[in-house]
Image (cartoon, rainbow, N blue to C red):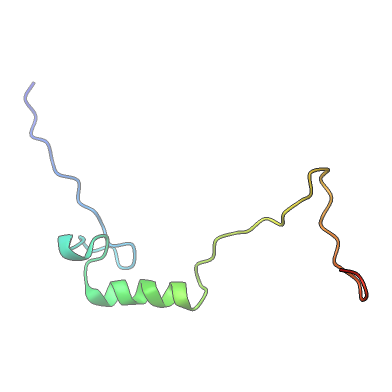
Length: 67
């Protein structure tokens, strides 16, 4: 069977409109700016895990007088 292959249409993650190839993955400069503002204002955050010592303990805070 010879089926026509549809090109996948990438959607803007902000508004859902088809993305502009010059602004991929966004559809407009406005949506790109909205996304940038979300990153800069802390709306998007990458979860962090506290580091542990080799034995699995949390590192101890240095007390006054210790180095």
